[in-house]
Amino acid sequence: MILRPPAKINFTLDVGLPRTDGYHDIDSIFVAVDLRDELEIELGEGPVLPEDDLVMGALRLLDLTQAWTVRLTKNIPSQAGLGGGSSDAAAALIAGSHLLGRSRDILPDLALQLGSDVPFFLTGGAARCQGRGEQITSLPDLPETWFCLGKPDVGVATPEAFELLDAKPDRIPGSTTPQLLDILPDLQFSNDFLPFIFTRYPAVARTARLLMSAGANAILLCGSGSAVAGLCNNQGHAEGLAQAVANAGLWSAPVRTLKRSEWP
Ligand code: C5P
Image 1 (tube, rainbow, N blue to C red):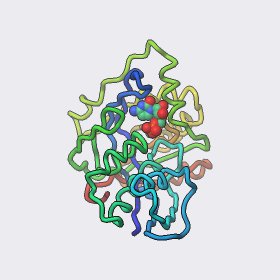
Image 2 (cartoon, rainbow, N blue to C red; image 1 turned 60 degrees about the vertical axis):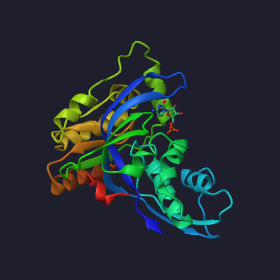
Image 3 (cartoon, rainbow, N blue to C red; image 1 turned 90 degrees about the vertical axis):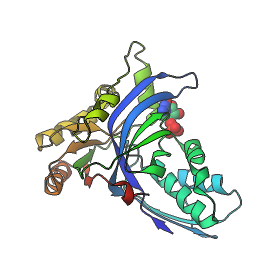
Image 4 (cartoon, rainbow, N blue to C red; image 1 turned 45 degrees about the vertical axis):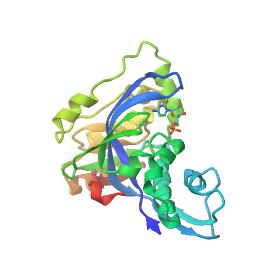
């Protein structure tokens, strides 16, 4: 069975103060985009991924004794805030449960055991994600919107990004998500990580400036970075920006938002 798990971007990302369990409540608009990995999963002995890959963790959660064949082609860069590893893990849950003839009802609980962003990728489309990320409210499909993704060579580890926020105890958590939900499908972006990540990783700020100077209409930070996305008018605009970013020696990709019917 072959699935093509997509990346996501965040139109908003409000981050609360640390909870007693160390996690942070978030309030975020997640939107799946058509940059996709390719994951092949079959029952029976064959090549697999390293044991510490989230895909293998997902398959172990489904069945500890089953032998699997797993092939993964990565197109979504890691440590970019694009959710690639989480999306692959959700795809493994979907494919594995299908092959084992198991109900999908068990998947949300398993997904959260794998990571805070994994439940969203069982849902896809556009969604408001709260709690650790597992409280999901599906949103109506947005009009197709094009972005250009750009990523510097640096990657951002998610735990470190949250630590940057916690190092400023007088920080006031953002609360823009409910307001920006009200104006959808008009687009405004906000992300509590942005000032912290731009300061700690100047290459991310430079990538954002590059996208703006190449003609992006607005910028958003993907998750806690290091990828940024520039809002574009259409596919041609996004492709032109991707070429400009690539010419500067950075990874880039033109992407469009996905409808719910396009994943999972
Ligand atoms: O859930 P996941 O394993 O992806 O989270 C990685 C790390 O990111 C956590 O260990 C935690 O430090 C941080 N995190 C958080 N609050 C969230 C999601 C992640 O503090 N809502």
